[in-house]
Image (cartoon, rainbow, N blue to C red; front, side, top):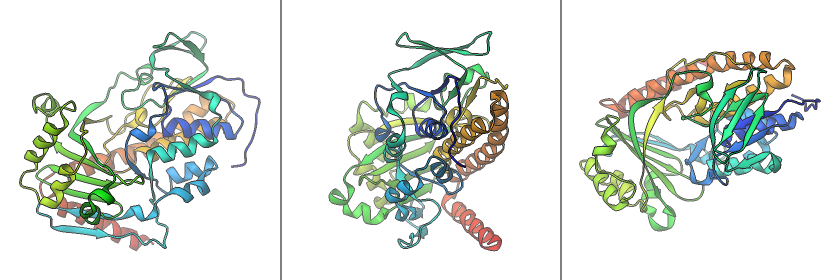
Length: 392
């Protein structure tokens, strides 16, 4: 779409400065529509959050094209990061995919921090407000929304977009539905400077992702662009289990020992992902919104990303959906002077594609933490490849 500029006096407030919020603001900026981003952190923390992201051709990459960043993205993306290995707990290998370095696939990798740096490099820095944690948002009689921040600042906006994640402070304006625990608990660890310190693990992991699945548990490894291997030791557990497990982020060495006990009968090459990890263990419960979640329409408020459809990471869609939402909403705003029409157009389209991905994510989570998960996932991926080849 050609860049346009229009006389737009609406105040658009984006709550959350992650990839979704930044993409939205950047595409609006490209079309001459101003916005402001309120981010709860005191500075950009994107390099500390999450690991390597695979950016999909029809969603995340398309949003980068709309933002005018696709060529810059190609310069820093890691196409070799599409390597994938799948094991069971004994070390039996079911899938061993090696990406062709000379052939650009559809899901190149990029670290979250590098992606946000890319977006920030083209965004007007004066629209970013760091250290603004939203306490509450209230609808006013004139259709505007009043935003109350923890630092005492109060703003009023014609359009508020919640890009503030799973525990959104904007979502309660639209729905009483809250996130629920998915049944999966994960522990995030990091093997820093892996190539120099643990070349045996790097050789085993290769250049992309490693999944080991068995006994309703999983060890997931992911090589990042900064040389670390990000590790997720995962298991099905009751929500309260984390409190009674004795595994605490405050005692990382004890936490690692307990995790090694949980995976005691797993192959030694797989346990190295935990054994080699540095002294930081971050426990996290995985939450989700109901598949097909929708809300009561409000012409002055909407949601993108995890605020709209948080799901498990087992479809690889989180950041891609957030960026696709940002693109679809921004372009709907560009196309429609009538704000209510823009919101309706965006939400109806988003509900359709997001519910499909939420179902896929839920089904994959169930499969990956079921009995005989590795052979089941192998069979699923083989059948998808066959379908793709038939369609092609």
